[in-house]
Amino acid sequence: MNNFISDLKFGEYWEQVFLQHIDFDRYVKKGGKFSKYDLKVYYNDIITRYEVKADRMTYKTNNIAIEYECFNKPSGINTTNADLYVYFEILPIGYILYLIPVDYIKKCIIDKKYLKEVKGGDFNKSKIYLFNKSIFNRFVDCQV
Image (cartoon, rainbow, N blue to C red; front, side, top):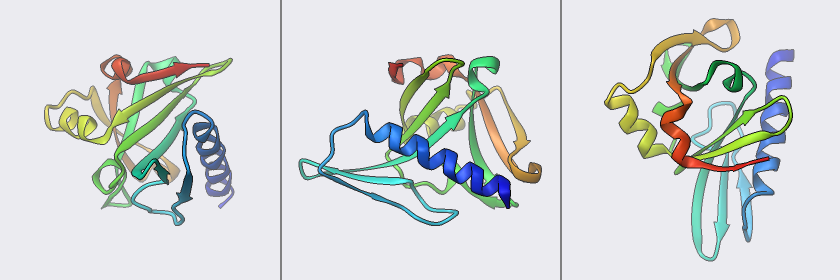
């Protein structure tokens, strides 16, 4: 349970960092362990849903990990109704922020642009697509 709580706090921290990068009138944080998105942001009568991820290993491996199954059930990219994946590549000092359209990730999966599928997460119960981060370079929003 400690891993889940520390992972939850880690994720919530990066959601707050993301909110510092965008303009908004208001936002709603989606609760629950298997929500369809993390943040719903309202700005100038436009609603955008975001899935927020942060990865400490991307800068070492050059891979971006996208979960698609957990405990033998669809999860992550297969269940999200977010418009954008917010992906923080955490660096030794700072981070790189990617804003990747969910539809683009799904197309990359259909086109098999991932390097391989691996297991990970708590108890190795998640299935994950690993992508070379270079295919998402055009979606880099900023580096801090």
